[in-house]
Length: 570
Image (cartoon, rainbow, N blue to C red):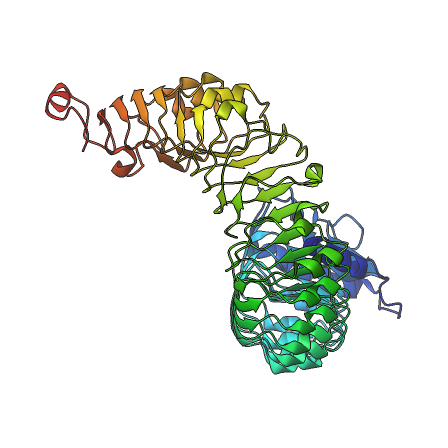
């Protein structure tokens, strides 16, 4: 949602008409612009996007130079973006100071090129007409130039997804026309500059995934036009300032993954426009305030991984929160005992109640067909799981690990479109093959059923799970040989079959799993030569420890003497 809004804002700004004053159109002028562009091109050593290959000919404003737009013979827009769906396209090089010679440039976007490195030129301050600057998702390093604070016409600035360091320069507070500022995913440090108090027109502020510190400043509550405030994953400390709850236009408040302490202020109920509220992964204490129930536009509430305590305001939440679609209360100091009715009976898409000390049978959701993600792990659920997910026709991800569930795998009914299944650390039993045969699981990407009481063989039909990326069946009672068909799972990146009763060799066909990054075969009864190819001969020896007689790299070489002297591995 945040990404879509950001794109909406930027797109809206880029499509506004250029300034209409007369621009000199003499060939002398656009030759200067052409020279500036060609100097930038010369600083790019590799361009797999093909954009710069179109920069030929005498006239850069002819329409043939991809990414270049002109008005009356002068370059006003330079927009080079890698398509989000393409991971192989990039540019390698640096940002040339020559771009600052594009005197009439209004829009500069060089984004997603991955390997454009070096510093942001201080000379960009000469771009007096610049309104929109986006240099995101490159490899730019060094400090943010203070000189960017001289770009008094700037409306949007995004430098996210780079390697920028140091403090945010106070000079950015001079950008009085700024509507959007995104500095996320860098390595910025220090407190927020007090000069940001002057950004009275700012609507979108994203400083997430940095190492910013200090308290969240009170003056943010005076930036009355803010609609998106995202400070996720920093090192902010102390209490949440009450001033934030004066931001009645705020649609998203994400201050999760910080070091915030104290109680959630009751004034939080004043955020009448908020639809996304993320306070997770802090050190917040006390009960959840019932004033949250007044947030009628709230659809995503995440309070997980704090120190919040009972009681929940169940009555207030049952009567309020009419727009709620996603709830996460996981890993607090809550002792819920049962799933609250305001959760169980709502039409929710995402329910996360891990580690909430819930007991008894699994809950009966009134509207199971709406659920797409469900996490009930690390609780005390007992009895069976057989038909629990049968009517969750849109369920994609389910985690019910580390409970006390006792079903036979053959009785478990799974939705056809499920992609992530995590039932590890229960008391499930029966045959693994029955779970696969009784369900149509062609969408599965992640399976974790480790640490149960599962028996039988690994069926050869496991190769039907063609989208599988992670398989963990460790710490069970699975016997027999590893089927060669397992090697047909070309997307598999994680494989753990450790601590079972598997026999025979590790099949050579497993070399077909070229994406595999993690494997564990330890504590079985395997014997014979380890497949001699990456990654198997590169794994540490511990991956193969405590088997019968495995040999070859990374273990000692296979030989008759070896089999005689070392009948099993210790």
